[in-house]
Image (tube, rainbow, N blue to C red; front, side, top):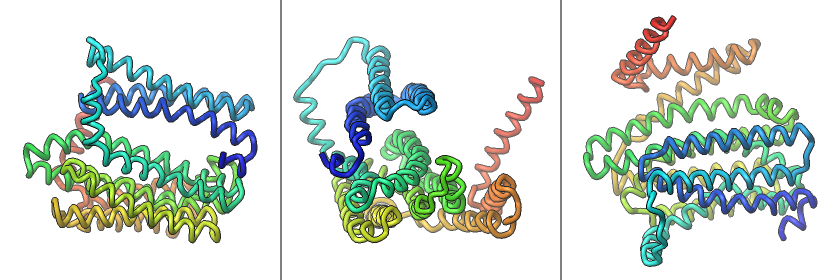
Length: 383
């Protein structure tokens, strides 16, 4: 109904059709939770990858043939339902061959216990979509498209943080109650590794925004480039919000986490209403960065004071310095070189500085060296 006042008829039909994705994705999320509990993450990942690859191939073929948006929407819905069906069958076949039984009392108890997760999930989903909705109220469909161009790139890279979040939670949950010292080590290592991965990604997004927009969309789109550059820091928060949010859930503090998410989304809404009418898509990016930084600040302060005190700066400064040095190499010292040369040199500088600044502990370097020697030995033996 809202779209009917803003978008073209074909866009409205696309939005209406893709609503069917919600049912398939919701069922898939439920079944994937069961697989995570049973430590069957490989099965979930394999099904997601196969269905995702099939969807990309079919969508690319549809676009190449010039088929209408409705066909793309139908493919999205079909893929979501196919993934849900395969995952449900797999759980039924491999985990509970005797079948499922609906237990209303069990459902009521679990829903009551898990209710705080409902606003958390809804508000976090709203975080990425609120800006686009408000943008459509104040600006043209073109402005929404610019924001979509930038947000799609960030969302694609954020899938890596989602994979880490899903994969690390079982290990954190098991260690927390069994061995406090090992859990503290895991928590510190998680901070270190997430910052090492996130810092160069953010730097690359900021520095290569123009090239990425041109390569992916065959358009210079200056407003999309600016939006992507301003939106890039949200990727950092996608990563570094993982440890504290997971720890609060393990500690049964999800009600506190829900309040923190609500505060951050209120800030997102207020900032969006102030910035979007004036600045358009870049205003959405600024509002989202503000919102996610508030969520990070609240969870970090709470965890540090109430649960586990960890000196965060100790794990952030080395990747930050290395990422700044990489940026200097990319766009100052090698400004006249080709993009490939600059990127390779930047990655080399970043890696060397991580070692020099001891961002990677010596024992992990020895482990990596042993893995490399083992792989190199097997390769030579086969040849």
